[in-house]
Amino acid sequence: MIIGITGTIGSGKSTVSAYIESKGYPVYDTDAFTHQYYEIEGPLYGWLLDEFGSEILFDDETVDRKTLAKIVFDNPLLLEKLEKKVFNQVQLDVESVIKTHQSPVFFEVPLLYEAKMQALFDKTICVDASPEIRHQRLLDKGFSLSQIIAREKRQFDAETKKKLSDYVVYNNASVDDLQDQLESVLKEVI
Image 1 (cartoon, helix red, strand yellow):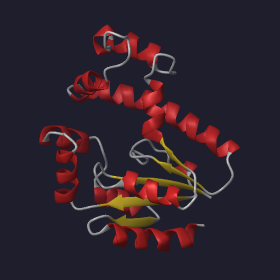
Image 2 (cartoon, rainbow, N blue to C red; image 1 turned 180 degrees about the vertical axis):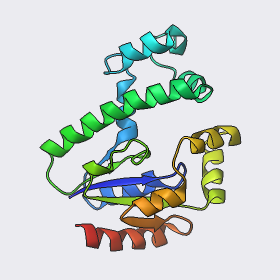
Image 3 (cartoon, one colour; image 1 turned 135 degrees about the horizontal axis):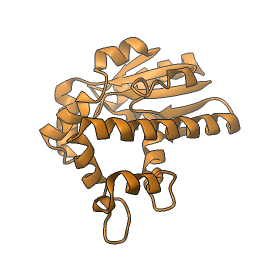
Image 4 (cartoon, rainbow, N blue to C red; image 1 turned 135 degrees about the vertical axis):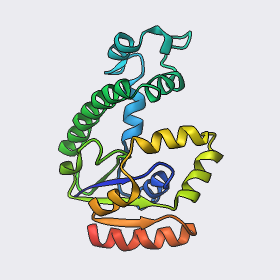
């Protein structure tokens, strides 16, 4: 069983992934894949330099992700181009893990539906939380409200993600409440 975990920004996908991992199941974070793509030896490093130039680099030639984010979030065409490149690489890596891994395996894919990757997964879990709670979590992490809104505009809304998913867990209350919901989902999918 190959299971995708998704949800809107700030909903608590990482909390869900950590809990599932604590239960002994492998969970792969596709955001972590993406971070590796931007490393000097990563598969997208050369492409990033060709597309965005050395202005996205720190002095040690590593990618300054904040500068890159500012550039692409200010230019929808560049963001779309970057996302397409990243999505293609993520799909290749997910397929590679699936081929070599015992079932069940979970993947945290924030933009699962936006990247049109749902066919890779037998089941999908959407993590949802109210906009107020999500925004406060992100503000606490150092995001500005304008950064949050810009990222939300690049994602399907929560209602769409919930409709497309096989399971929905709500992360508006206590950790115990979230874990109870996850236990029910795990019983069904495993």
